[in-house]
Length: 270
Image (cartoon, rainbow, N blue to C red; front, side, top):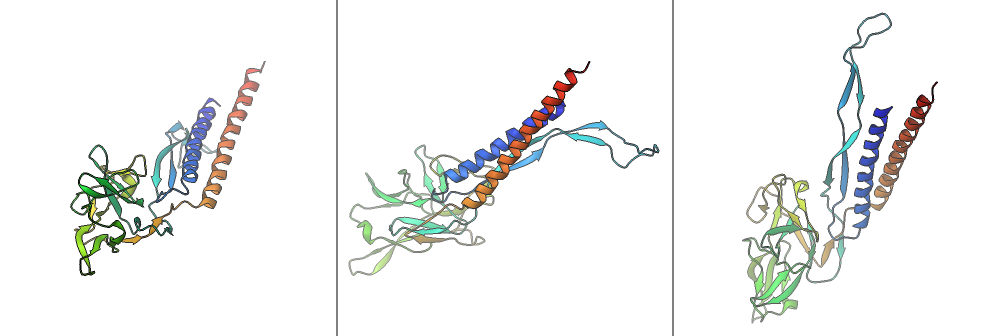
């Protein structure tokens, strides 16, 4: 009975983590480019009560007696499926259709990755810098910030589906500025480290970033201007998962109640 108390407690702890994960998904249902997270579970050690069991005739059975000791959370994985593209009409909103990530340089000088394409041009000492909503410079295919002179009219800058920048010359002909938004892919995007502001960091589990403009083996992503990628969270699925997690939590709590009552009866034996 003591074993059942600890087993049920591990179940309650695991389901609480499951509920926490579901609540985070629902909280970010309207977050740009948010990717759904899913809690995964793994059984704990098994206790061998009897290595060999026998039937009523004394003949050995092909299996022993083992009792499980509960469950634990083994991982919380992100599902990097494509989110819905939402039209915004903003010239500096970009959505990635494919497996790519934008690259930005954070305040500490490191490189981060995101699928949130809410960009803007910020004015600095070097000129007009293409930045994300937090002011982090967006990087090109060479790993450099995309900077233009102050004489450029932002409303005249256009982008194609691979992120190349164009601007009309004095004759009115649109020409390339020889600058391209850097899009990278990872062998295992689920291994990326999540930080704040929808930014991700490279880890050993994710692998090194592969620049789409340089790696011909990759399927090229497409950049959709004037669109943002919505989250891939489905509210109905999350509500169903929440109900299942709540019922599992409730059943484990009932096991603790039942075990406590059994212990109470055993203590009252005369």
